[in-house]
Length: 170
Image (cartoon, rainbow, N blue to C red; front, side, top):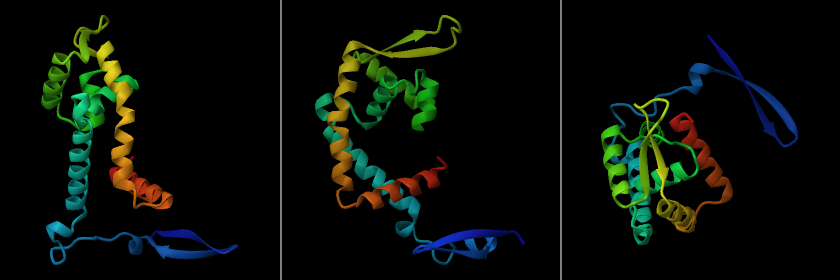
């Protein structure tokens, strides 16, 4: 049996507690207690949908939506430069990514070009207009997120961020 040693800090004293690893891992859902509307998956989807709707409404004046915002910011910040990198980063399948890039290109916000070293690779670059729109996103997006998080203390926000990173494996 594998054992883990945990250090619990109580005031200024450190106590050592031994816990069997089997005791720390558990199935949170069973066939008896699982209900769709009480599952973490349902709550995550609901939270995502709320934020997406609010973000889309806030970005309306920029004539983009939340998914397009992710593409523009990724390109502006140099986090991704190809459709494949964007698909992977944003969790969007390549077919949908192509359609989204078509839309942004038709709006004059980005251009596609072939990589001179490898013609199979398509590079993406923001146009001057795309740069302007991307530069305005930070004037909008934080307000949407802060409004949704207004009931959270700084500690709760940090804990939510930590737990979501743990949940997604980041």
